[in-house]
Image: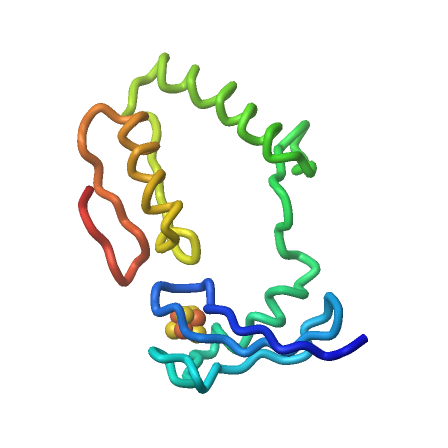
Length: 142
Ligand code: SF4
């Protein structure tokens, strides 16, 4: 199978450093900073360099898990969201919004879809403003 080179951005933080990913089929051969990237110009921090290890980690979560009888079992996204609905709404009804806390962090917190929906989701659960911490090094009130 022919080797290919892909140019992407690192998904781990808002710096969005440019990646040069060499692959062969589904296998990642190497990841390094993309020298032609207008912002990062070839720079990657150690987390970016470790993306291959993260991608191949056998313990990496690849789908939702639901705890059943004390054990986490794989589930579809539809099943996971149905579980959240079934368990979260009774908690909110019985104990009010103070019974629920939301947190978001990298790598998802800086994605456009997360920015668009996380705040709305938190406000839908809570009737008053909440502290919204995105990560230990950068936080903002919502
Ligand atoms: S390489 Fe490091 S600094 Fe750059 S986006 Fe990834 S995690 Fe952030």
